[in-house]
Amino acid sequence: MSTDLQNLLLGAAAVVVLILLITKAKLHPFMALALSALGLGLAAGLGPGDTVEHFQDGFGDALKSTGPTIGLGTILGGILLGSGGADRIATVFIGARPVKWIPTAITAAALLIGMPHLFDVSFVMLVPLVYAVAKRTGTHLLYVGLPLAAGLYISHGLLPPHPSPTLAVSAYGANTGLTILYGLIIGIPIAVISGPLLTKFASRWFGPAPDLDKGPIPESSPEPENRKRPASFTLALITVLLPPVLMLIGTVGTANTAEGSLPYAIFEACDSSVMSLLAAVIFAFFALGLRSGFGLGQLQKMAGKGLGPVGGIVLILGAGGGLKAMLTATGIDKLISDYAVDWSVPPLLLAWLVAALLRICLGSATVATAAATGIVAPLIGAYPGLSPELLVLATASGAVMLSHVNDSGFWLFKEYYQLSVAQTFRTWTLMLSLQSLLSLGGVLLLSTFVGS
Image (cartoon, rainbow, N blue to C red; front, side, top):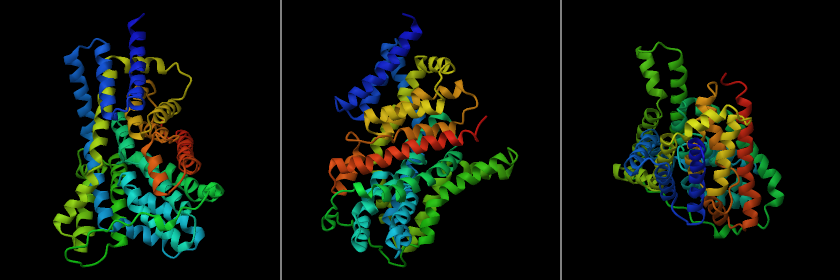
């Protein structure tokens, strides 16, 4: 057996072992990724010392760009939620509008609120609002709850600073501003289809209405130490939109100014996801925190509460980087690149397929993206005209395909909305599968206008 074929088989075996460790052995994804990566290096003959060194280097490379972005985004979301800014956005969007406009309004609000924060946290914080609106309007809980989840997951699945797209941006060397721009171009129409339109179409499958009196009790927000004024809708909206707007301005500015000039330096700072998010965090600190009377200790607790769920995700992203580095160290990525030019499958479709298969097997979009990027990254070298931003979106959209019983989000949706497993498949699983397929279609369509 040739060395090339042997290494390819070892790479495939590492992915199979990863899937078995998570699905059968029930190991934490971080441990499963680490064991798969280290096992691949040892099996390929790198030696213990080199194997560990490559894993550590990959771990650090993955986190040096994704860690600060995810951390700042989470802090921003924590202040937005804790200060009442998110609730203010949702209330203004929903208002006293006719019942038929509720799904559209809550999808738009959720898309905005979900931009800087993790899906699970935003969802849990907003579920009491869903119950309140459903009770007030006398509608089925899913009539409000399904479009909320659709709006939140568009942000979670396609837009940095969320973990999956942020990791893919780092792995493929993509531009964050352009990724957000393309993600919004694709995501906004899909939010309309998978939110209000799907809600109207799927309402016949909702089944028995949950008992609205058994809903979760709203978590009381901290009272400001020195109450001054409630959170402003305008300032909350600026807080959410500031990072993507700054990054888009930076992307356009750096492309149209001379490198080395003062304007270029300013635009380059705006183009940085870390600098843009830091600016938004500082703005939120004053505009939503101190302005409303929250003390420094309260703001610190808001930020700390948001950072709580991030620890495991950061470890997963780092271990995914370690697996990617091991594929490089063993030469598997070069083999994939050499063979890719002869494959008849378009690279964007291949990226989506790899991520989708891993998602279906593993359940976690973050883990699926972490594993898929190591396999897909060599495609950039094999296809010089390929847009790395579209490759990010293809991979990230594949990683939300067919959520089912091995996905924590499936059970979160089911339990909070008091649904049966069958109801959850007919709503949650259908919604995410539709988003994934439509996102792939949007990426392929956009690729006809982007890249060479």
